[in-house]
Image (cartoon, rainbow, N blue to C red; front, side, top):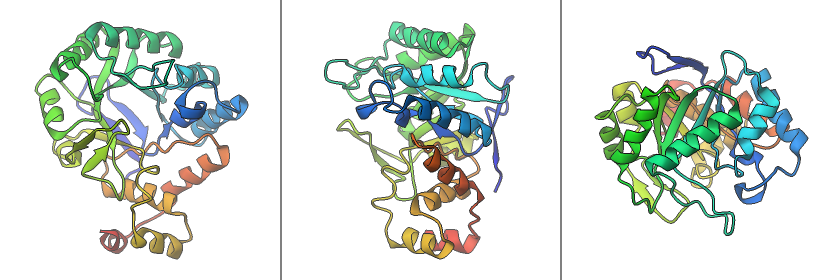
Length: 291
């Protein structure tokens, strides 16, 4: 099992990362809104992650609102040269009801990119996923066109997509290079995902990613992956003396060399537990048993 992944390997600016990243969403306050309850620990989580080999951090300007980006800059700037900060655009937050409305018109996407650049103190976003949101009125192709426009302008190095169906990924590939996909994926949830906003989107995109050599960043793998995992994951975790959450991460790392898990937490202790999952070895027999 390789611990290294090169994102967009054929491009002029490939990104090489360790295959266990960190997702920042849980660093915010309740409901993914506002400042964290323990700001010093949130900063320490980010510092500890990087100190322990994490070179891929996932964020979004609509986390918080813009809280995780601020925390990243405060904890880690100036950034290590090997650190990749991946952000998302396509959504915003309603400060009244804390909902997640689409924000995917070309001028809105540009506004989000500028905000990310400003808060993260970057000249160009290294990797940005366009997130498909339910209820969006702007056609997918129009939003993607704006993303590629900003890439040509030098504001974005690499364009990715998030929460996409195989059909949408294919459409994006017809417009330009897709460096990565960020979709819900786990041991127990591989082909259909409920995005948390009342809409279910079907289709497994991993085979398509493997066909085209596209990095796949699974999100919510612990939140949605464990309740339905069944007895096999629990049994094998007990045999190996690890938690089910750790085994789920290990399964992702063994499932495909293109998978880049980003388990998130607001606890330094839990972060260390997640990172330890990278050391779990699963044999071919183990993977066959899990199915």
